[in-house]
Amino acid sequence: MASLWDFDQIAIGAKDYIIGIDEAGRGPFAGSVVASAVCVEKSFFETFTYRERTIEINDSKQLSSLKRQAYVKEIESIAAEGLLFYGIGKATVKEIETYNILGATIKAMVRALKQVVKKHKGFYLPLVEDDLPLFKCNSDRSGMPKILIDGKPIKKFPYTHEGIVKGDGKSLVIAMASIFAKETRDADLLKLDKKYPQYGFAKHKGYGTKFHREKILEYGPCPEHRLSFLRNLLGSKISKP
Image 1 (cartoon, rainbow, N blue to C red):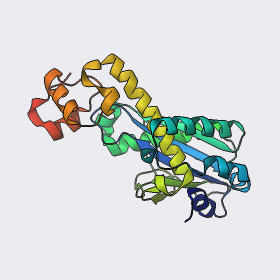
Image 2: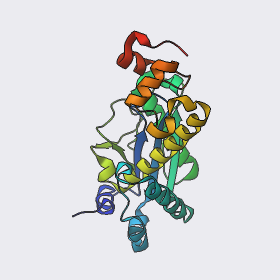
Image 3: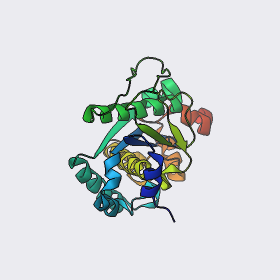
């Protein structure tokens, strides 16, 4: 059975770099949506020790929190050695309400990519402004990386990419991005739990569990709740915080 490493080693093709992008938090009732981008150079796949160090990395949903935290440290260690670069981007609840969840997710992904570009000067990536309508960039340029995104291709994404359905269980760079995104968002929800302890964010991480629904009905939404999500699911019972 091919490993996630093998998938990316083939997927990179003639490119010098491959980037995996994934997000966490598209479905919850509360909190920002978080995206991560992980880039590795072609020579990464020529170093057997990196295969050994990443061979058990998988879809973040298949790993315990302790495993994810351990892999975050391992990926950061590899990044310090110079063949791996990562970035994390977020879109706020206000942006989710303004641009809808897809638009906000794209913004978070673009911000994650920008972080990678800041750390890695080896490839060309035309930047887009966060506050302007997203537009298609001409990415057929020499040195442009291969970009893989978990899920189906995103029509409004400003860079040429491939959508890999269930990619976090197929591609190593997507799996690594999924781990960073998940751990970052979970950490954010732990902070929200301390600020708004009545909702139990530490337990359900903002998802629409029975407990979470009950607490929203009891206390009303807080400023970190996505009102459009609550109106769709809970109707007129929800009022502004």
